[in-house]
View (spheres, one colour):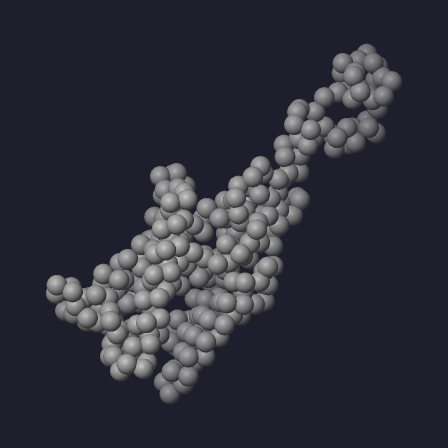
Length: 296
């Protein structure tokens, strides 16, 4: 299920030469106007050098400004913004888990679910990122995750920490694979991700409909068995693989955004996109672990 927030942004598209170029004329800086040595105008190599021109000459012949100086996207921007958004999700989740009274947990969970879904769509299709809306999304998502995590933890003690660890281990492994170059985003990779993501989305909607209107208990179709194996386990492992592939897509999109000279504000785009994928990955692990522990 390709991340719409990246695919909707032109800055995270096809790679092109980085911005700014090393030298706008494609060559090393040369001495001024045909002179053999970089001297102040009219001076020779044996004449004294006027210190008042030192700073001007240094600016002219000095190194090009880096991305941070030109307001362009950097990896540091992405790391800081992503860490901040995830911290909001975790902080609100912990607060909701411990502070919300028992009788209010279901209403808060549904408010968080609906609010996160709506703001997720709004943010995903905005042409320019809105930090306030992204933080608001993180807060709603945190409320939802805090409530649903509390429900799962009550039924299967210890399941939340297991899901959290599995999520961040998967994140670390996919990042290492991407950095090593062993996994690349190719046209075939992209086509598979789009088809598999759309198929999984259709299955999830059908399963939700059966649970709400068809009277199916538990995890719906996921609770059924195929050759003695819970279908939810098979689907869950497929979804985890799909989410990991989406992380690879996210990393590749961010890399291209930096190469393309995307504005620094697009770090919020990257942070939001990664957060969506991590939330999805966490929920899949939570469900897989619940199915495994429920079948024992």
